[in-house]
Image (cartoon, rainbow over all chains, first blue to last red):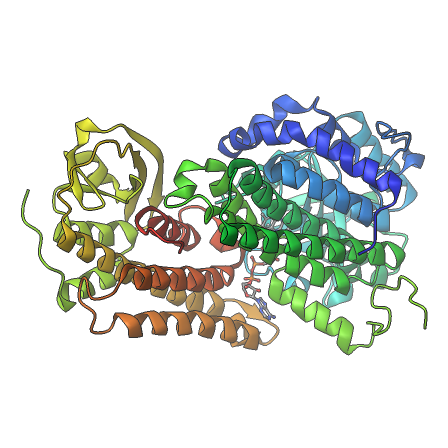
Length: 393
Length: 227
Ligand SMILES: Cc1cc2nc3c(=O)[nH]c(=O)nc-3n(C[C@H](O)[C@H](O)[C@H](O)COP(=O)(O)OP(=O)(O)OC[C@H]3O[C@@H](n4cnc5c(N)ncnc54)[C@H](O)[C@@H]3O)c2cc1C
């Protein structure tokens, strides 16, 4: 286990404190996902609304124990997201901010695009979206069929996207589409909404209701040339490569969200069952150890992508482990409250429903396992120092 | 109240098929009309998952073997969910004062019928997964032909076959409660394998993912031990 540096401990503790608001609102938001609109003034929502914007674009987040955390590192995001998901994952995913789209912009956009995107985000809390999945293609995202057809001054976007978080209420987002065939034929574009030909409708989900996942139809949406993300880069750097790298950077955060849900389930038991039988205590202790173990993996996987963006296969291990743990922990917690636990403890029911969604966000366990295997098979994994933390040889 | 029948192979098969072919609400309607006609079935903690018509029509509540007047207990409606086959309602009853006259035979029939019913729902989920995966392509083939996918379908099927094997030849009362509880746990495990195969489509309300969710809640309401 590697300990967190002092500054990261203070970040964690601050998020834990801010998370109390999320915990208080979680069940109400589960009934009405638009409730978040009334809570833009909460410190955690304010923080998330600019998280990921680098300082050179004017981001001045509230200092935490004398440090400013811009959320531009995967490890910082993992710490923040575990704490806020543990408080309430619904509020976390409902909060406005640059998140997924922001990571892509940071990685690929040119100066003018960054100025524009970050400028909009700093003006007011805005929701953003990241539209990759299509009705017929989820895991096989590289085969997407949404088209970008050139017209004078830009292109028009046509096709459909599905399950896109917050798209129905976002003002800004990125859409992946095809300008030609193959992996090099994919391009991400920035889209501002409302726009003619753009329609996004919320889909009702079993859990993670705060995410407002939506179905998007794109019927000839005009995209000016300056909104092509990474237009200063070669096609090999802005197509499929772009979303693979973006996902590598985001994945530890998704794993951390799952970890936060697992911890919320664990803490629900410790807070609501005062005396435990011996066998119950043993079960709970085991769950606690699994959470600790997964956290070590998540943090080192995050450090690895911060050091080398292409090392995302480690985060695939972390995400698979943590999303399974979230499910197991939520179910296990129900077992501490007897028959009808989920009827009598709405929080437990919500944890089970929310945990289930983590399997799909940013790629299913099967796809993560294939990616992990690929990392091993292609010799990326260093047997002696898998996380490249510098083990003496 | 009309009298209930002792559940034999034919009746169990009716519950099983209704669940597999028609859905949760129709299957619960069949089971309830066979075992607990006219009653609102609740589990040992007073929790119920019932079709809307049952919730609307019953005057008496059956609390894990004991019948009481519905007006004599506190009732709260927790949720109402539209599913293929009809709306189901989640209820909770205060368990307060209960009589001691437990109808053991009804209890055993209801318990066994529920396992058959959940098995039918889980098998329907398996078939839905096969159709979904067969309809989605990756590269030059379908998702159903991916080896990892086949393996997961097989994992689900193994659970179904084990449950079916234990149920084969068993009459109401023939299997101890702990075994029934184990069977429920296996069905829940199968559902979890399978529902992931539907991708995010299985996370939408009103579809097969929510049926699996409700099936878990059925076990939660009516089965005493952890399942
Ligand atoms: C809460 C939530 C938020 C989301 N947010 C976004 C978002 O903001 N933007 C966005 O673009 N998308 C988003 N998604 C969609 C998500 O990325 C997809 O659900 C995911 O990629 C899986 O795609 P699918 O649902 O189409 O499943 P499918 O691809 O249809 O997969 C079905 C099953 O087949 C398996 N499978 C598929 N291919 C293979 C293979 N080659 N080998 C082995 N097994 C395979 C899968 O593991 C799965 O079990 C979100 C989903 C959820 C639930």
